[in-house]
Length: 366
Image (cartoon, rainbow, N blue to C red; front, side, top):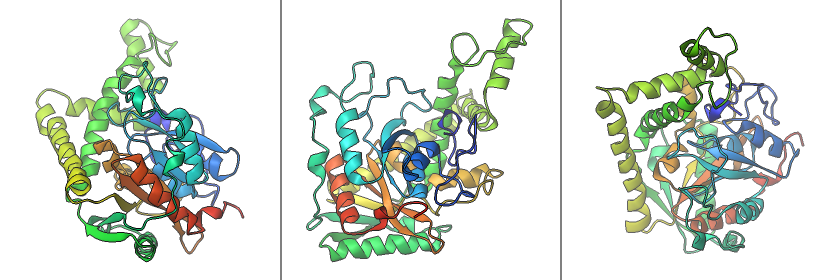
């Protein structure tokens, strides 16, 4: 995985780079790229990942598998090293939607050791399996027009348009909708996430947590050398940015404004789901298929933009799932993402799409 879950390609790993089973010259996505690659390569039945801004769904898209970000608080985060606490969620990466439901029936539910965990009344074993219905007739599915943005790969756009046609042919009510603030999601996310990261990672000072420098002259020198040696360049970049936006004179200009934008993004979803009667939204998972190793590592901004379609679900605390939605001409998987305000409205259209297409049946190397 990317170090401290910070990255979209596993190229920021503190140990070794992970390769994509579909093409070893390409990244598997990130930060949970190792989990996605293992499932995609049939080396395990399922794996867990952490999703702060798309780190389960984007690697699932790149590796041609299913990745689920549960609703905030549905899965305990006890034991998870915190990146951005208001965004982080643990979820499964699986070979199909049924396996995702099976895993969620095991790992979901209340945990008294996690203060953000949803109360115990929501933990009903078999709940997720009951959502697997092969039928979308009468369901209203929104397709945000903002997804047709500059930089969207034409092959991803074709897969997105194909999904729209398929759902319509299966009896779903397909509606063009708008998420007017989605363009601001990346900027808001990277202010909020880095601010929370700089706070969470302050504990790694060489005293109680993680690495401790053994080459220090005194206590202050140990603090400095520990943090210099113990963090990679991407982690340092985000800690610096987070500390900056929280500093005196910049808090209101950046962090407070980002939180206001987050509220607007959440309200966009609420308007569609609660006022306009949209059951779920369909978006691309990522603007492209898996890119080549080192292709974007020198340009952090381009790397950050690979999460543009996934970040908004984290900012709003909504559940979202990525599943195989097509392939490029080179045979690389393309992910399709569904976002809803409850898991039943998420799993039913996902399961229907999977059962009536064969994109999930193809495996890497076969």
